[in-house]
Length: 165
Image 1 (cartoon, rainbow, N blue to C red):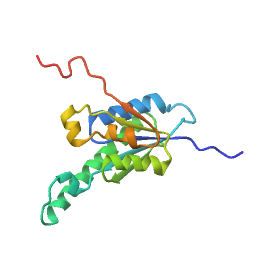
Image 2: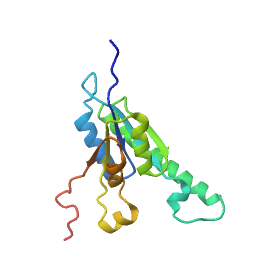
Image 3: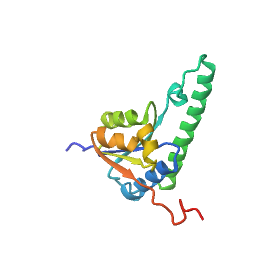
């Protein structure tokens, strides 16, 4: 009898608290560490922007871009290290972590295709309507373009969060 491969769940992470809340929520609700056979193969993906796209304007000379790229690499490594630590703290030791260069929208949709994912989980940044219209929401985009179920994990507002006295 041939072994059946487990469905793949992808979680997109960036440096935001919302994305780490989404990763933690997903680990708590879908990946049961005590179970000998977790229901999903978990792949955690961070999309590292290209230096030119993250600057938003053209700069003559390569030196500035190389510094920007170095910073983006450091951020990417921090994000992946933090994701790894969160998995270990939840006793999840078999997650795959990937850093893929490019726009998060394309990176996540491409990863769904590449890994034949069943579920894509992302956090919700909760940007206002104007910022969302200008930047475009990653969660909106993947909801419409990823060929799998998309789960948007929203971080609940704390009692005092967003309240000014």
